[in-house]
Length: 137
Image (cartoon, rainbow, N blue to C red; front, side):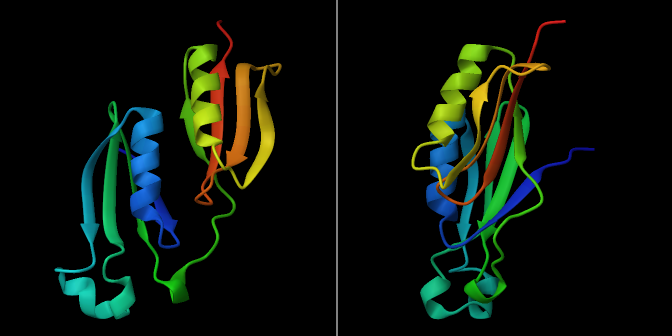
């Protein structure tokens, strides 16, 4: 079994996944617009170029998402996509990359009692992220 995060974005899925692929070192495996699929008639004409399904692999992890049509989009709340890294320098790099034009920094990346680095932010696409780099045992 594999459990994956699935992000519903407000018309920015393609840009978000390209950003995540660059910053997280991932590979976009799928970027399927509504147009040309049976779902095309289920969205407004101006929405058909928006993404029906995206799949990004980062190592052996998967992040998926799509554009939620305007009437069905809800701002993400009550969760964060968590990134677990081993090296503090990599934690700093990723946090600052995801923080480019961020909507909010909830907690700047820093050392905590449990982590060599920990930080929380809401990126420019509205996705809440949490990054954790545990202290060596």
